[in-house]
Amino acid sequence: MERSDFWWLSPSQRSRYQHTEFGHHRPIRDDEDPRFVNWGTNICLIDELENWCDRFQNTNVYRALKTVSTSPGIGEIIGPVLVDIDNSDENLEDALTVTRKILFLLNGELRIETDSLRIFFTGRKGFNFEIRPQALGIQGSTIDQVRKSAEVLYRITEALRAGKTWQIRNQVSDTGTVVDQIYGDRFGYRLKHPYIRLHSSLNMWISTDGETKTRMKIELTSNELNKVSATEIAYRAEKLAT
Image 1: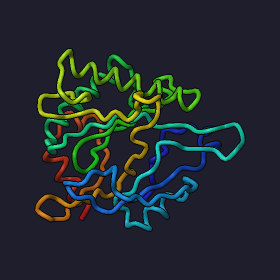
Image 2: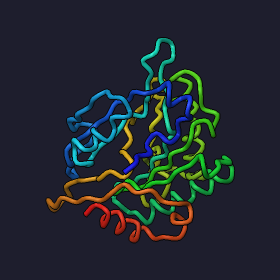
Image 3: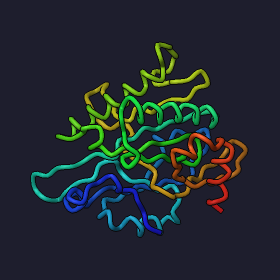
Image 4: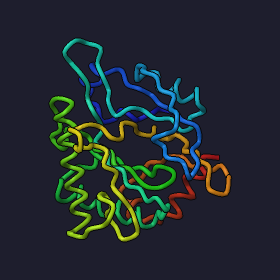
């Protein structure tokens, strides 16, 4: 199966930025914080992605948002621009409603074309948008890329909040859906959430009743996002994981 995790790189970028860090973790219990789980990571050529996935049965596998070059003076590129929508109570209908609002905003106010945007169900709590950085004018140094990405995320979050305030800073709905603040600025611009789950990989976790559950991260078209229910999306992701 052909992977598409680096779809956002132009051909010239693909020839320059060839290394990234792959990650893996064991299934996480509902009462665990992923930040404190021991991750296994390794810096590899991006062409070795399939081998990494095979090593861990394509389950709970990630890559870093940074892709780097070994050539002197080239540095690193961050991408795609990631909009991560989650509901901690796994209220997928609410997360889906928020995701639809973001799609409308991206297509309208931000004028993102279809070929610069991809949509995913993460397999459990919510949805991701991946946006080609060039479509948002994001370039420059690593700090510049993070800062500009943070500005985009702030603009989206504020549009969703529409003047409302909740106790959680990045909450965007009454039912607890949040937009993950990946590009933080509290201690200077940096990646607060430096990994992204790999496309078409399996999301495995342990629920509060001790049952191990698995769903696949799946891609959705704009039409599917607007017409298919959250229940149907989750069912499809579960069937593809078996």
